[in-house]
Image 1 (tube, helix red, strand yellow):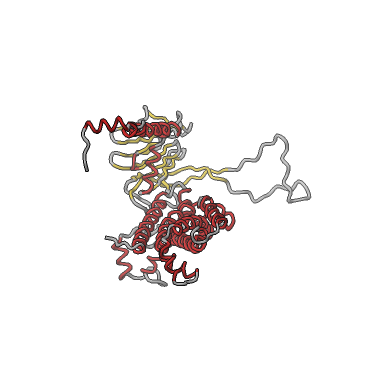
Image 2: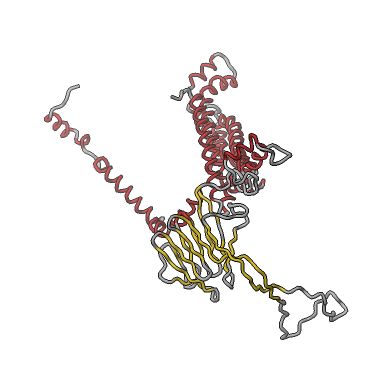
Length: 501
């Protein structure tokens, strides 16, 4: 190669100036691209009001939701009666179990004599009927006051709570007395005066940032970070203490194994006396785990398997239908342009409607259940497979097909031995990829009633309180997707002739 000197370059530039003249795009394409991208980002920021969304977002609630995925709450309520007597109660399905007595809630109890207004016993003597029809109620005269239910005073001895002290965490406490509640978080302390006569709650000073009161005298909500929160009104103090982990994951409060350590459970299962004469301890423990009413392990696992089967059957049926139709759509296989176009437009129709829309349609047609999910996957993937398969057929090497035809093979044998071996690895690879992808899609369409783990997940999210159950199902879905992704990758690598290293 001969290099041109400077003089020769100048002569060449004068003779052919169009060669060395750079266009505006060639000279400024990088600044233009950067500027266009910056304008697009600014427009998107304005159009979607990203700044306002970020500013108005309630990050505290978002943090609480995130914490609910990995934690649970115990919810004692401290009721305060009109005479100042207090009592502590727990919700019916609270994870603390029967006879709760947590060490973080200290209660001072006293036995006192209380006078309580109770309904009087009903009179056995009835008034005479006002007409011959005894089943007709006696008419009340205009202006006559409605009869008042009789009450009677009862005096009895009761054990009441006079003082409760709740420890939510380090330097996070709630001191509850009949007339006041003292909240402490770190170095900050606020005293709330409870006026049961007016039903108001008043602070002895300005409230800190972690306590809020929407209007004077209204209830006060105090947040203690991950430790929990409390709601204080004149008649009740609701405490929510948070614990890290998933409560009662293996054994519910109704199980005989509840509250026992792993070692104690193992000892009972291996060598302990039968807790239920009709079955072994191993069978009893396994039954309690599977039918745990809080976590519903068996139902969740069954729904997850239903999702996997739903994705497999829908993908399989779509592959079986798209395979022959793709030969009709390929122009080099069937040389009939109208038929090719009709088949391709059929594929476009099936795949242009999103799988979620098909799921809604089939849910209305067949009712909620896996049949609707299978049909949605089948319709969508038939269109997608048909397009991909027909394009793969149109790009095959005709030499192999011509070689089979040259020996006098019939048309069916030409396709069988000249076309199918070329495209089958590609067809199977795409089918495996879509099967793995459809496991995720089946989860989404299940939320609209198509069955599987998606419906179970949506039901847990709608309660707005079972976020640990949501996290559990999300983890199971991630594990299943990870496993089938690796299985699919391994099979596809073998089909296309690659070896994993």
